[in-house]
Length: 84
Image (cartoon, rainbow, N blue to C red; front, side, top):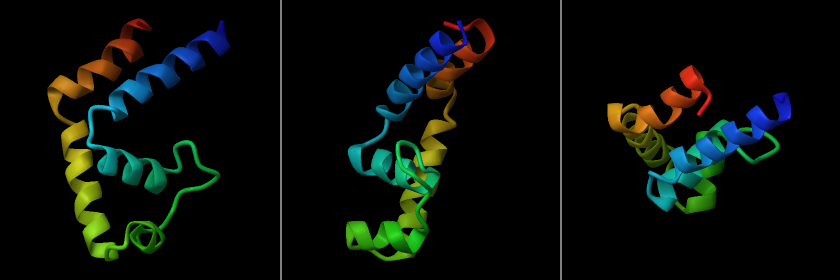
């Protein structure tokens, strides 16, 4: 049962992140270590994308703001409350 919930949560998280642009999604994944061995620093992400760490911070901030929007947060909220 526990493994089923973990897999279900992973699917919900994937769909949640897919609401972002591909660039925003990749930056969030790298910064938080989602699907990676560890989280990347702003500078490391900037080097991957060929932008400054300040630009990475701006994109990350914008993506997190989007993810906090009530319409998007419903995707995870329903799972966390009801398990579906």
